[in-house]
Length: 210
Image (spheres, rainbow, N blue to C red):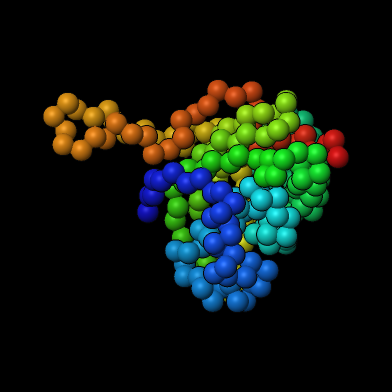
């Protein structure tokens, strides 16, 4: 199943979401989920970034199986695959640094889901992202991500996050013809940005500096 849509997740969206479910109670939250709703764990992860919510972020990842795969694993040891412990440690440093030294929320994250598929126990999400940060060397980040999620017990978790070049996921619509009744000259996904860094670089910065 392929879904194309643009989603910006502001703080207000998180507030309304929090009113409808308890992010910190897996059993209660799982009661609201069906297989297609497994994408909610992805939304929780994005919301956590935009609000610097450490607990919500950790809650989205499988602490037993999670792996992060940087975009370029040939850049040295710091760009090799890392586990939940490394991910949680660097994310804690990231959120703490941004919360203490910059405006809140300090990140502007836009994500376009280009592919989503789920069964009763597993799911796959592909998306483009564009991320702005207050850190000068990493002011603009872009690329793509591929997530694997699974259901353990009654709850969904992200088990693998692979950072990939955004152009591999980009999908554009053809330009509208002059006699077209409804215009189709829109693009539903984020066009690849020409940025110097990606999300992997941003993570490695916090993984090595803090």
